[in-house]
Structure formats: structure tokens, C-alpha cells
Figure 1 (cartoon, rainbow, N blue to C red):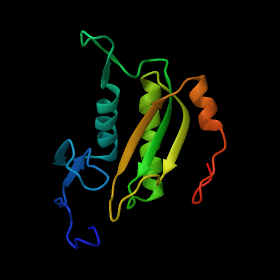
Figure 2: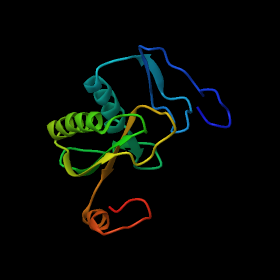
Figure 3: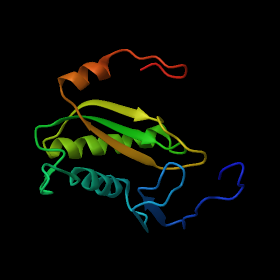
Length: 147
């Protein structure tokens, strides 16, 4: 509910979730019946891991993530999800990635990008190489958080 508007941007029934909703309430990929946390993580990882990229002008595609890859995994709370729940989601996501042969090199769990009164979470995967590892390990300070 944006303060200037006073009304919710969207509403969900008690037994609904919206997958892929934007941080400001933009419509998502799909609205569906509430499922278990593990089922939701499975759906999110499936969408991420089956995404592909063009590898040539002929539109041939290749998966972005493959067995043997190392990744940084972020579970981001959208503002209204307790940290304990985020860690449960992280644990399951980590297990599923490892089962697929994708090594979680570094993890981030917390509220990194939030919205007013927004419950839920997002999953971010970043494939890392030596250069990205060095950059992610470098100290960085901003006024609100030290990484």
C-alpha cells in the first residue's frame, strides 16, 4: 500500500501466491494456489535454471547454469518475511542446487531489496568465476550496511 495512494496495488486471496511479482507490485508471471515453501522454491529454481541465452545469431540457445558451475545464491526477503523463514528457504534451495551439481560458493540471506508491506522473497543466482569471486570478497561499505 503506497502511502500516497492509500489503497493496495493488488490483493491476493488467503490461499493464493503470485510468482514473479515486481518489487513495486507489478504483475508477476502467474497467480496460483498456495503451495509448500519447498514447492515454491522448486518452481522458482526451475524457472531460473531452465532459462537460456542465445549463443549465436541463429537463436540457438544454451542453458545459463550447468553441472559443475559455482554460484552466489541470494535469498532476499521483500520486507515482511521473517529471517528464520528466509533461512529455511535458503537451506532447501542450497540442497536442490547441490543435488543438480551446482556448487553454492557464497550465500546471502536477508533483506537486500524490500518494499512497503511486501511479504515474500526472491531468489538470485549469479554464476561466479575467479574475477567475480575476488570482487564479491572485496570490502565494500555503504552508509547502511557493511558487507
